[in-house]
Picture 1 (spheres, one colour):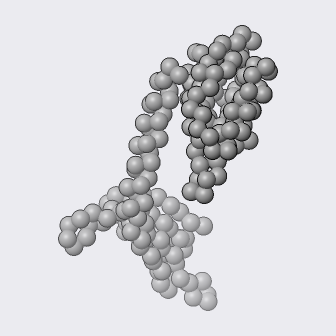
Picture 2 (cartoon, rainbow, N blue to C red):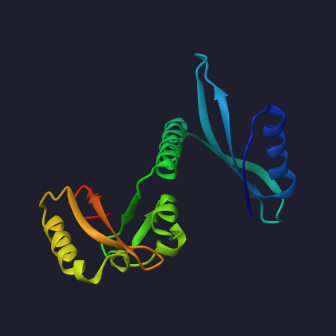
Picture 3 (cartoon, helix red, strand yellow):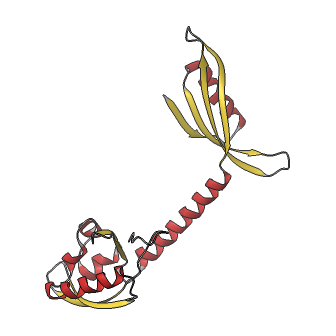
Length: 185
């Protein structure tokens, strides 16, 4: 069994070490340490009891890794996610993304006010379900051109509201590709 947590003070660190010794369980914790030069470093510490043949703990095996860069990257990612959340939840436009197979992966909350759907009703569904049947051939053509690398910044099509009415929408499309050019979203 392994236990993971974050420790902020010396007493808690000592308690974690005692727990490894008394209970014989492995522990992983994160903590902030001060280097000799005074700078702070984030560390992940893994402690594992080493037992002899009769099962008695005779030593502790420990590894401390500097995770400062990972923590900073996670903090930046969290900040970016929060910013995206603020933008998408407060936009008067529908913000969405679809996977290459055409299913919605995300739809902003504004879809409720504009089309009557909740985001949960659309995520995982084929995006063509909200377009007028007569516009599907045009949309498939646009999609094929985009996948082929053509820049099609905007297109217009009829979008089905939950109540069955249709509205004309102009859509701005950006393709997300991986480092090898494969379409991700």
